[in-house]
Length: 407
Image 1 (cartoon, rainbow, N blue to C red):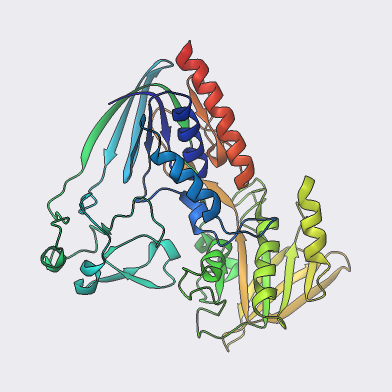
Image 2 (image 1 turned 45 degrees about the vertical axis):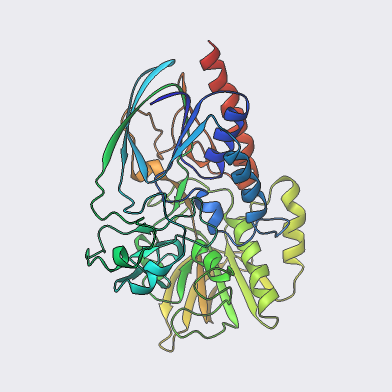
């Protein structure tokens, strides 16, 4: 497969880069490891500071993508290695089997007969789905996928499919792509909360910021109702723990840039849905730069949202589903022990390449991709960033890639 520009990653940065490059007239190949495009953004409930749903901008991007005749996208594909130099890269890609072909109409009859349930990966395991599933209702492409490890190959879905769209004999295949320039937009993962042992990560009512996004989403595990995972109870007191694993030499030494703003957004979710709820935000420093200062002022003016300057030392089980948060209020010098009904950990943004590296790329000490001639990282593959910054970064990466191609 030949490409002027190869884009690795189909999240908001990768989509923006691929579409901008293709609309300029270059041949583009986009490789995405998930069975759908959109990355982390499609898991969000709303953007800050406007607090609007992400599907608005995503639908426009996907419409533009479909109009790009010189853009080819490949889902369920992982880049294994990159070799060569600017103008002449050779990229090895493993395309994993989807077990469902393009003949799928997303009718859903296969789901009705599937006997196997799995934790829903899109909702971080907070609910269940079948082994054959549509990742989410707005998934693009709108094609079902089978979890190859969970599927017992019973064949009931094959019998139920009227369109002969299921092939349980699909195998992995290797694809070689020759590209002149490469844009790396591999995105990020929430830091693994299980490593934060002092914060009681295994307790069902201690969730992450991304789990909170899914909990508040209309297409999430509770259809948008914010409840405690343990018993479905509406929480009246919620503590948000900032820098959970960030700015910590034992975990992520760097600031993830957006966690403070995401927590403020989550506080508004809670106050909007549960008017008498009390929200407590434990923080080291508030990062609300530039135009986001007004957003902070709006949130902090709410009398039911209290900001407490102090890092949480530990969380304990109160024995009734509730949790006890221990911290020091550095503004008063006093220790705080507070009982709450739910805790949200603002886990940091860890670049995907910190966990799963691509052979042939160069990385800094934190796992972010280092730019070199012909290989241009953007979005959170390059540094922590919000959605707007990631889009701007992606457009800049396209300009650099075009220069390489033209040269």
